[in-house]
Length: 212
Image 1 (cartoon, rainbow, N blue to C red):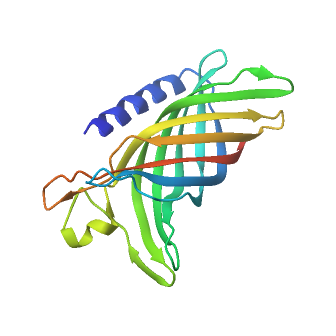
Image 2: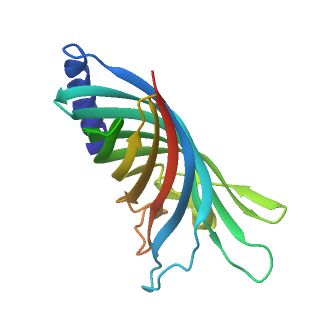
């Protein structure tokens, strides 16, 4: 419910600002290096490793005051982690639709512009697999699951924060470094009961964009 209220408030603000300012649009694509961090019910940290994925999407830049912009977007992002085993690694492959809404500082620097930003994101799980060698099972996104499905289940809604830094050339092509810190515990309930497990999305990446 809180996520829906936040989205509505941000969307209303964006629409209000759009009616008063010139808005630019852009596309972006890049590589993710993600992990699933947390600890099990016994307090032991998960021994998971970074997994490579990708992201692609669109965004808008809405002027707020000189050099500052509100930057909402929509991304398709591949996340997850991998677990090193004696045979084939076990890979958690998760797909999300993400709505980042960043406050962007974009001053002139040389022939182009510096990019510095931060803000929240909301992620919606839309698919995924647990894969080991040629064997795979579908990920289940749910807030409450049976014990037999728990090992392959995550909450559908994710929420966290973004950081970004980059540079936009005079040609409107940009290169950007970004990091994400998930704040939502993705471990679902089991038959209506909360567990003591904690697991969150984290990651960083590099992307290239173009503004129209």
